[in-house]
View 1 (spheres, rainbow, N blue to C red):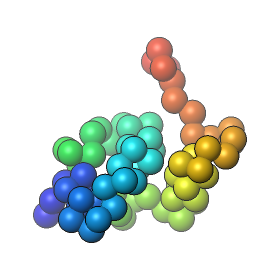
View 2: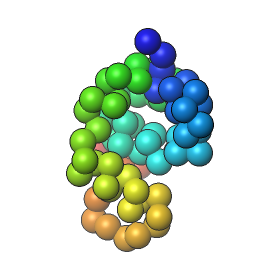
View 3: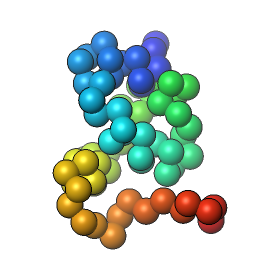
Length: 71
């Protein structure tokens, strides 16, 4: 069991780190260095992954949103 951050590096997907950090921090799971990889892989569904890709491609969407100053 490794952190999701380490899993990304081990699978040569480290460039996707920022993109995956958005939904995990929005959902309150914490930093990618502290969350176990199986947890992220299990709970990021197809819809969330689609949003991640669109966000990474800088395609404007209403979601995801971050509350900069808290909720």
